[in-house]
Length: 286
Image 1 (cartoon, helix red, strand yellow):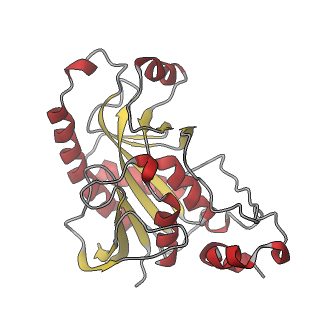
Image 2 (spheres, rainbow, N blue to C red):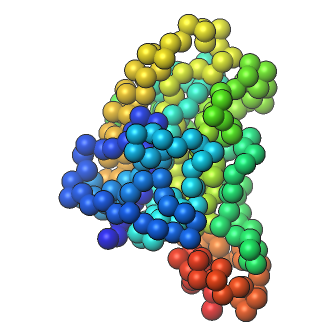
């Protein structure tokens, strides 16, 4: 029950039709249950693990997501790279609905979320200046271009708490700061993936302009759903293209992100915490 690549499906992407040799795996973790059972399968000749971020039937709010369980579940399955597909709002005219953005920065506007595996007797501080894997992000961008999508490389993803969308004042403020897209889920995934030494990249699929846009009030639920459906179809093709392009060996620094990050002396780490974090810190705990 091992996989090379993890795929997180966001709003609208609850499954992938190209997955073969499927096997559902329900995992229990010290951080609660993941959002849904993982689907272990083959995609373009590679073993992958697919997770529906919001659960079966889209039941889980962004603030309710068990981010730690989702990421450590991938770690337990042997995943070294995660491609995360997410619906986002656009903060710039240039990023149109049904475009794809591969951001390279995040800005945190969340308030209620646990964003680290550490604490409870173990302190660690990872470098996070560059929060996504540059190699995997480039692969995602190239795969989107090859799929014929209008794709944009780079930019800042504002991660808001939700579940409400922005006020007009907030939306205009984010635009004045030069941010690019806005969503509710990806920052915690990126932080935890880095702590777990897993490469992470976001495929941000634009469904609408945020409320700053003068045409915002004319956007209907039906229009947004249509964009979600179209984006889901595009995302499946992009992800499949990306998986086929991923090299076997990692040349980035994501796989050693904890090498100088753990501050606590090994003998001072509580035994129960050491056991819980064994999939993540095991190679550094001696």
